[in-house]
Image 1 (cartoon, rainbow, N blue to C red):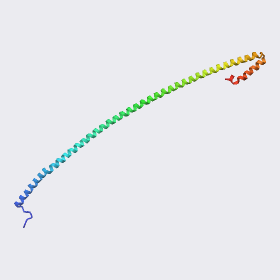
Image 2 (image 1 turned 30 degrees about the vertical axis):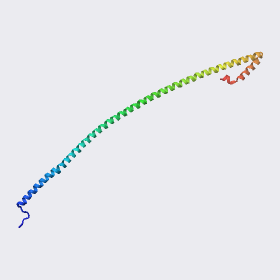
Image 3 (image 1 turned 45 degrees about the horizontal axis):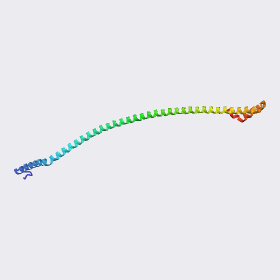
Image 4 (image 1 turned 135 degrees about the horizontal axis):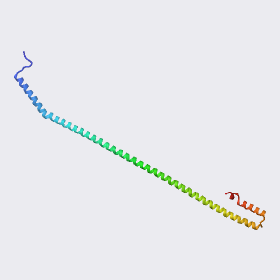
Length: 171
């Protein structure tokens, strides 16, 4: 009977050569192909890790920068509010000052108007006195001319009063 698998010396040497060749092939393939690929993958992994570390550092720097800018914005907002508050206070003071000056000006104008009214009253009163003196002188002249009769004198007074009018004596 023949065997399917015969262990003879030739088969054993061929098997040993095949195993040795496969090992040599693996070593050569490892040296030529696998090590460069491993080195490439290792360098890529290190580059990715350094990029991630750099990104993390950049993220932390950006966060710190954001906080600093936020503090500056808050400070600027505070300063703007202080400036606006100061401007409002100044405006309120100026408003009060302008109102006070306007009141003083109004009081001065009213006082000036009262003085002018008093002067006008005095002028009118002086004019009235002069008119009365003129009328009295005219009456005296008429009385002297008409020879001092009582009835004539009464008629002259009545006539003079009519000439002056009622409005002159009422004002």
